[in-house]
Length: 228
Image 1 (cartoon, rainbow, N blue to C red):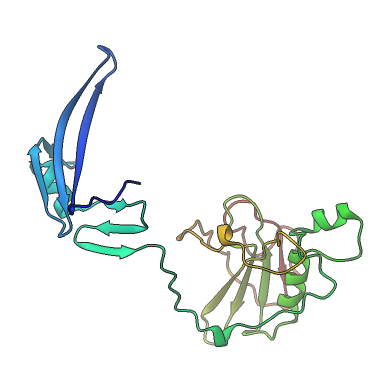
Image 2 (cartoon, rainbow, N blue to C red):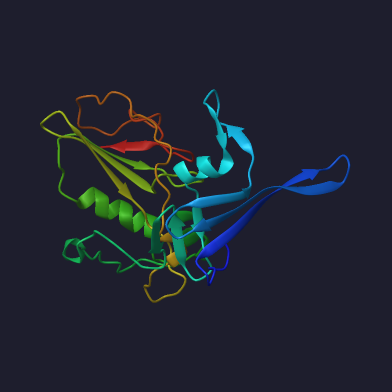
């Protein structure tokens, strides 16, 4: 993160730290302008892998780095945008509310809800019930509980369609910080792609799978799957 320059030029230097001799020296000095052009006043020659040798300024101009400024501006070469602007392609008319009656929305997992000794269920348990009650898209359906570090979702719903295609639904349920429902900004952003473990072959039956599951664990922290 750096402050946005008032004159439209950003100076960046490269420093070589010689730890053995306890010396630091400037080996690269250049300015970036708002059009993505880089001018090196002190340049060095570099090479990527087995590619041709080129100046560092030319390399960064052809492969521009992402620069984040303290005022919220982000630049990638000649492209500049306000990273604080919220954009979404999700049509709000597609949102469906879930009835959270009887749910402790501050308890994300069943372990937390059980430890409190109340009668309300956890957010995860409520979501599991909602997913089980939804109309099926195909004949067999697997609801995989995948909560844990490195998860790609709290629940993965795998359904084999009549066309032979497989539909994958990713569902998250996060606890509220208070009794009043709200948006948790810190958990509203996800990094993709995450790890995905390929499910095993889908058997043609309509019963519950064994604890070992016919569908493999997805990501880290996977739990036994449930087939329907």
